[in-house]
Image 1: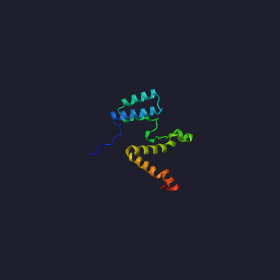
Image 2 (image 1 turned 90 degrees about the vertical axis):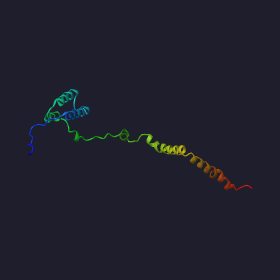
Image 3 (image 1 turned 45 degrees about the vertical axis):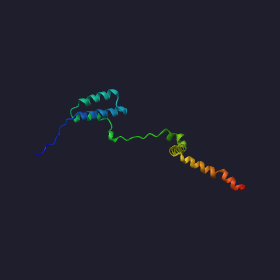
Image 4 (image 1 turned 120 degrees about the horizontal axis):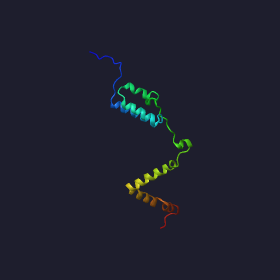
Length: 133
């Protein structure tokens, strides 16, 4: 036994009514509905019993699925120059690496100290003038 085809409207539940009010709210926030229109349509949506009662509420509104998101350009792209902190970013990153290494492994600083002490200016001066005996 098969079910007969339905030609009449289908009953809707609270979930469908809530979804309709949420969609109307999205249109209100987007500026497509005035406060009075939103309140009137929301009231009709909450009182609706059948799906064909909801359709007229959205007849003059665009389909949310068909909306195309408009990407706003950041102000610095419009002005043509990046913000100043982007120029400082490489220096800040190097400083961060040095600070993290020095705090996590202070022996690295001692290695640099001894290399500078034995391989620095004193080492070059001895080779240039020779050793005294």
